[in-house]
Structure formats: structure tokens, C-alpha cells
Amino acid sequence: MNAQASVAVVVVAAGRGVRAGPGAPKQWRPLAGRAVLAHTLDAFAGHPRCDRIVLVLHPDDMAMAAGYTAREDCRMDAVAGGPDRAASVLNGLEALAEVAPDFVLIHDAARPLVSPGLIDGVLAVLEKGPAAAPALAVTDALWTGRDGRVTGTRDRDGLFRAQTPQGFHFDAILAAHRAHPGGATDDVAVARAAGLDVTIVPGDPDNLKITGPADFARAERLLRGRMGDPITDIRLGNGYDVHAFTGGDHVTLCGVSVPHDRALLGHSDADVGLHAITDAIYGALADGDIGQHFPPSDPRWKGAESDIFLVHARDRATARGFAIGNVDVTLVCERPKVGPHAPQMAARVAELLGIAPDRVSVKATTSERLGFTGREEGIAAIATATLVAR
Ligand SMILES: Nc1ccn([C@@H]2O[C@H](COP(=O)(O)OP(=O)(O)OP(=O)(O)O)[C@@H](O)[C@H]2O)c(=O)n1
Ligand SMILES: C[C@](O)(CO)[C@H](O)COP(=O)(O)O
Image 1 (cartoon, protein in one colour):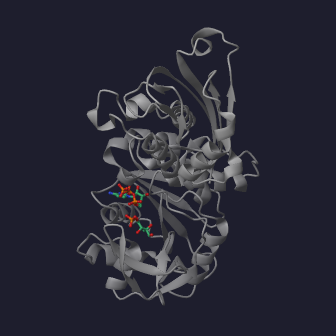
Image 2 (cartoon, helix red, strand yellow):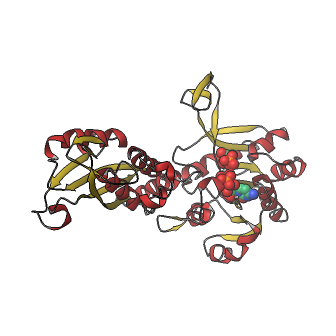
Image 3 (cartoon, protein in one colour):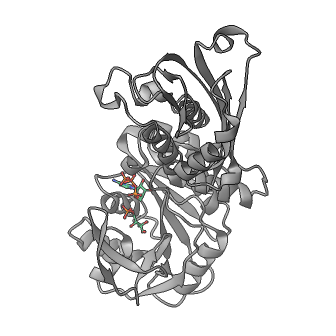
């Protein structure tokens, strides 16, 4: 083949993105202000070697095709996909059968960070051989596990994490897909089943496949960095809570038991400080509030330690790709005196959140004997939390 070989691209975007969680399928969700799919298509349409693109969409999404295919920099056609990735790829290849380009690159719509250099690397190998695909050598230790426990180890030597675009001589991969029984995870598996020799090209760690909910924040950070946009995704939330006094001999504030001549009344342990911090984190995530996640009507939370609410909010932030930047809580009461216990409270909150103690501030104020806190009818707490995309 010479340098003028024609190149077509099949972008598969017909999946439903179940692992990405509720909402629109991942290729349609926003990333740095545009759909994931728009970034992916731009990467190929803007590459000087790509002559045409076939976009494979779910049959239910075909009405959206026009918004993406009508462009001047590259010819693009849309076709409907099949029930699994391999079936979608085959539909894309069949749409190119008449054109029969020399090379075809097959790429996941869910990998919007594919770089021109990676495309170049795959194409360079296709000048010499029938198939090339990017991959990263496994560098972490590998374990097997069950029920949260390690059950064994595996040798990582010779193992790779496969990426796309996977590139092929078009006639060879079309024949291979037509002959394959179906169900292959990727096109390298199809090519190898047909006896094609596949060369490994160095992959790109940034060329992640958006798969779970946390991948959006990571992809957005990488994309914005690449666009020279210094804005980090920082979320700010606030939380406010009040609990009334009742008879008793201690109160629990920010996870610390403080002797007092009253107790706080509540369905759980009535830790007004942890409740406010928990709500601040939910607020930063735009993820409802403590009452939605732990309804007071649910007997499971009767007398519960509020630690579990805070840990739940922390885990929701982590799952969405955010680290907790800092929290600041102010307890409003005349008594008990909070100051002597504040360092211990901050240490406990930091421990529960898994962050450094200097990222947690616990303060207190009186309300100058005004209002319900001034009359010692209860304690109020107000909290702020920041979340930073990782
Ligand atoms: N029937 C299918 C299934 C997947 N894909 C595409 O194949 C790529 C990689 O697949 P994956 O990450 O598994 O996507 P989904 O199938 O959408 O995800 P999930 O398995 O979480 O539902 C995605 O761009 C996806 O749109 C496709 O075109 N047709
Ligand atoms: C093709 C692929 O992107 C290679 O890593 C991947 O196999 C497709 O997605 P899945 O997560 O295996 O369904």
C-alpha cells in the first residue's frame, strides 16, 4: 500500500451505556459542553487521512443522525446498529462494502479522547500489515477476588488493555466479520479468528472508554486540559439542620459524644453537625438530601449512627469522580461548649471522609441568646463542602 491509501472510519455508537448509570446513553451525554459523540466524531473528521465516516446508531436514535452527519470537513453517513457491538460493527462495514476503502478504522464512540497521534500510529502499521490496534501493557498486579476478599494472583506478563481505533485492511476485516459467529468483544478478536496478524501499537492512557459514572468527570478534566481550559470542575454545596433538645445526658456532635444535661431528639442519633455536612455533599452533587436517601419513616435508621449517612454521601461523590476538597461546619448553640471538643470532631469528620484533618473545620457560635438556639431549645448546624473532579 502507498501513503495515499483511502481510509474510512466506523464509529460505533449504538450501545445503551447501561454501566454509565441512569440518564441518556453515554454517547449523547454532555462533556465539556457538547455530546460525547461530537468530540469523538471531530477527532476523525478533523484528521487529514480520514476520507469518510460511517456512524452506527441505535435504531431508536436515527432521528438524531442529521445533527451530526451534516458537516463539510468529512463525508459522514449513519446506519442502524445491531444488538451487540460486533453486530453494529458489521452493519457499519457493510455500509462501506460498495466503496471498499483500503483501510478502515473501527472506533468506540465512547472514546472521545482519541488523539491524532494514536490514529497516525495505527495507520502507519496498516501500510505494512493487515491489522493494528492500540493497547496498554498491564502494569498493576492482578488478583482474583470474591466477596471483597483476594482469592489469588495472576501473572500480568504479556497482558494488555485493548483500546480503539482498531485498524484493518478493509476487505480482510469485512470478510472476517461476515464469517464470524458473532458476539466478539472487539474487532481484534474477529480478525484473529480469521487468521489475521494483529500488530500492537502503543496505546494512550488518556484514550479512556467512558464506561462507569466516574469516567465522565475524568474525561471532562482531560478534555478541558487539552483545550487549554484551566477551569477545574469544582462543586460547592451547603447543608443546614436543626434538632430540638429532649431529656438526656449527652449530645452527639460531628461524631463525638459530648456530656450535657440534655440530649438531641431525632430518628437517628440526631448528630446535627454530620447531617449538615452530609447534606452539603449531596448538595454539591445535586443529589437530593439526607431525607431522600434515608427517610425518617424507615425503621432501619431509628437510632442509627449518623456516620453511615456521611459515608454514603462520600461514596456517592467518589462514584461520580469527585474528591472532597474541604468541609466547614458551624454549630449554633449556647451550650454545650463546643470549642474544647472541636479538634476531636474535626478529626472524626476527616477520618469518615478519608481526607486530611486540615481540610475539615468545625466551628461554633452562640446566637446571643436570640431565637430557638438562644433559648436553648435545640442546636442548629450549617455546613459547606467543596468537591473537586479527579
Ligand atoms: N449494540 C451495541 C453495543 C455497543 N456499541 C458501541 O460499542 C462501544 C463500546 O461498547 P460499551 O462501552 O460496552 O458500550 P455500551 O454497550 O453502550 O455500554 P454498556 O455495556 O455499559 O451498556 C460504545 O461506543 C457503544 O455505543 C454499539 O455500537 N452497539
Ligand atoms: C473494543 C473495546 O473498547 C476494547 O477495549 C471494548 O472491548 C468494548 O467495550 P466492552 O466494555 O468490552 O463492552
